[in-house]
Length: 502
Image 1 (cartoon, rainbow, N blue to C red):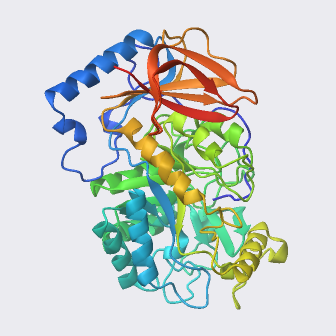
Image 2 (cartoon, rainbow, N blue to C red):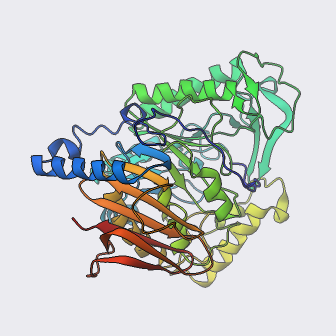
């Protein structure tokens, strides 16, 4: 949640899993997020469907000599959204009404499977009788979760494993390194050390209550931690106990705390989503601490972000931050994600009015020059001029909002979901192979998603059109009637999904 973190280009992450016959890294069912499903689609395949899947996999293993990563898809929920419950801070707490019922209906029709909430679900400034870990109206929160469940969607409320408002009555300075704070917008938060026993004793029971009291399906954890590689404050907090490996490559105490939280989530059959900082992954030395990793906040260069996150262990959920990032068109959201088995998050819920940036009695420590306050003012001015839309649904969203965003997200989602069915083998960024008539042009990346169907994803990241010849015949998977072909023209900065003819 360090909204001033701009991405330094470069690839991070580790290859986790078991090496199989073909080159690459493969991870299996132990890495799967629990969703509570009784059985998967693959458990209901007919003999013919199993045969088709296995023949496709056999073909792929013969044809693909190497790839950056292999993965077998298990229990993946690609259709995720951030839901804005209302303005926070505000002059009154958020409420639920007809709009929310209708919006959840729209999201169900859209295909959304998982809803992520931010800290406005609770009352971190204690304005209305709640606190960082409890909402002003617990019954309303339970009702929202029930409303989502009724439509088959899961809900993950926000919490942080290190951030705490300095004004919180429970805060103790000995938990945090002096000067290790985040001050932006209305937030004035200390980064509490994951190595502090006192902080852990304060935090963990409160996270457990979030998991237990509202019927939610897991939790979204915001790191609130400055990694060893980025640390600017070296003097330890008074309450820290050095018990783990701490290097630029390993954040030992942070990894251990995340693992403890992850175990609590899994014990309840839940899902844990994690955000560390910008486009960072947690440096855990291979320890599994998330089901979904949310990246993109504060990142200005989308190409550099793609390179940084493309080899992270699944599942990665990108959110291009329109405060900073520039894209040529909305197709680029999918160009950067789909070839690497990622899918962008949708912004949804109630429209943001911008009121949150100018609430009487609320302190904004950096004043009117704060970029978050400026963003809220921009939203407020747009909303006042255009109360009927187009709307902005989150401060990471574009201002003004783009009416084409939802239809485009729905179209790409319909094309992406077949690629990540349960049991799909994915070869990401294919190296040597016999799938093509010759070497791929510079700037073109190919990935394969193999199940009952064989999908080939071609991404042209270059600034010039490219021509690709496939060894087998394919058809475009966009639903339009197209002829079978082996020759494919890829416009610059474009994404093409092909389905193999069999």
